[in-house]
Image (cartoon, rainbow, N blue to C red; front, side):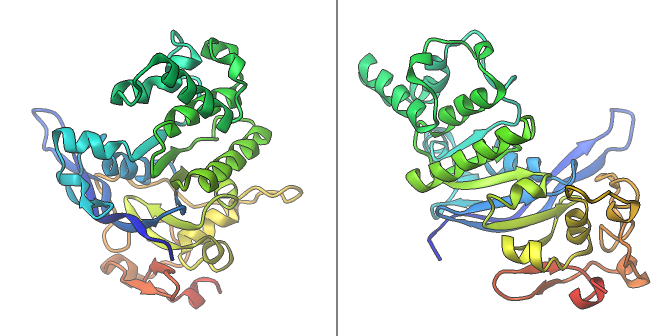
Length: 325
């Protein structure tokens, strides 16, 4: 296994909710999440909207400060860094946003959008050096260098996302967080962007944290998968283990809900009920209110994490064999 470049330890993010005249409630958006990321690895974090996956990555890169826990980047405690040390470490962490239409400044040319990170970090000495860095990055992501003076409105959605990717990789970061990077694109364009990300990973030795609710997309890019529900990790494993041997009822239901050509969706493929409020999560197992296998003990106690080997773990009171019956 390649070196560990990122380690997340018992990460929690709680929000206080309520007005001046109301009792404040603690919203547990992320509750005790731990994982590691290896060099040139793609770790996908999946789950429904509201499961805490985006808050997890925002807490990791400190767009929002975590309530507790540690983020270890290259052996250094990233959560304790301040000032210049934090700014320097952030060069190694970049993000690709979900919406290619709103994530680019419409008043800036492609040249200035892509050059924004190197302008902020002052990594070029001459205008010619800056220009060459931008042109090289455009070639890497499949953009015609003659488009360098164009504005975002002159491009398609897929081309705009390539501009966003170029902006994220121009500093050659170690880790790129992909926050639903293809969900706003047509299916045919999604495949091209996924292939581009895999190509860049090979050429630049990048590690990805890939956020998605679409397991069909995740299957084509992830090495390992973290399944989240209501702020908790309920299952973790290699892509092969998750797709071929899902052990948590929530993971099984997510996989059953993947649309298949020629197969009609039915009610049994869907998860019953709505996602509970993170300000008032269920007692015991957080999934028991929607779980088709829930028993009385699921309400009474939290599940222990069960290790199936090869890094495949899941948190459920039932045995994997019972769940799949």
